[in-house]
Amino acid sequence: MNLKLFRSEMVTNLSTSNSLLSVWVRELRDVTIQNDRMRFRRNMERIGEIAAYEISKQLPFERVLVQTPLGESEAFVLAQQPVLATILRAGVPLHQGLLNYFDQGDNAFIAAYRKHHRDGSFEIAQHYVTSPAIEGRALIIADPMLATGSSLVLAIETLTENEKPTQIHIVCALACTIGIEYVARKFPQAHIWCAAIDEELTARSYIVPGLGDAGDLAYGNKRQS
Picture 1 (spheres, rainbow, N blue to C red):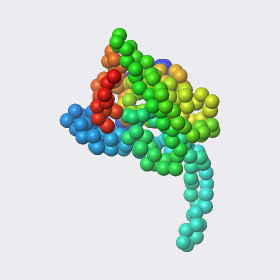
Picture 2 (cartoon, helix red, strand yellow):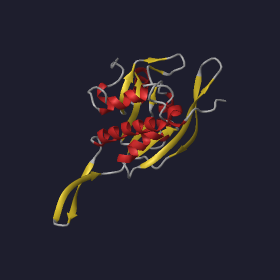
Picture 3 (tube, one colour):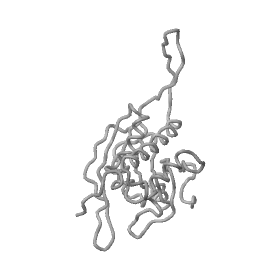
Picture 4 (cartoon, rainbow, N blue to C red):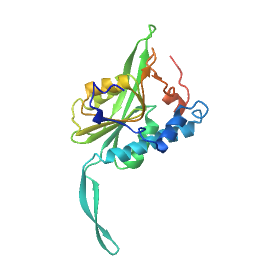
């Protein structure tokens, strides 16, 4: 992977060492397994949970005292809850995994899709955004497939247009090096967390070997217009 265009410490490939995560990625990719929609969604959710745990190590904590039945105990809690964002609809299972762990976090949702043209090109259409205040908080955004990075960059630009988060974390099931490089140029301060990284895109900007359309596999084929 070409690391020249971005800071390698800001990209974490969670599959660099063998773990159960590798099993879940394999099931997401496998055409003999991935059509089990419940299993597909749950594996995306699991990846979100693993990412949430790792990201939590990067967030500020504060010391508190806890009263037990027998005395007091020192503990540490998040100094501030993050904002969890996702791009509808494909990002919902991955977002749910993050929410399972950051269960007191606020949530932001963006509706965006590729609007294809007859010549094969496309633009990102974004029609719906709802978000809590982000100023001074960590922003964690889930996008299962980081291909070109166009929709993700537009989403982050929209969310941070008038507010500045303290940190930006991007969580992906699969990412392509082209997309990573594009996002890193636009947001060099963002930390990208991937379950796996692929090297290629097709002419229609789908990741190879990838896994197909994450939204369709999670929720069923969409009607094309």
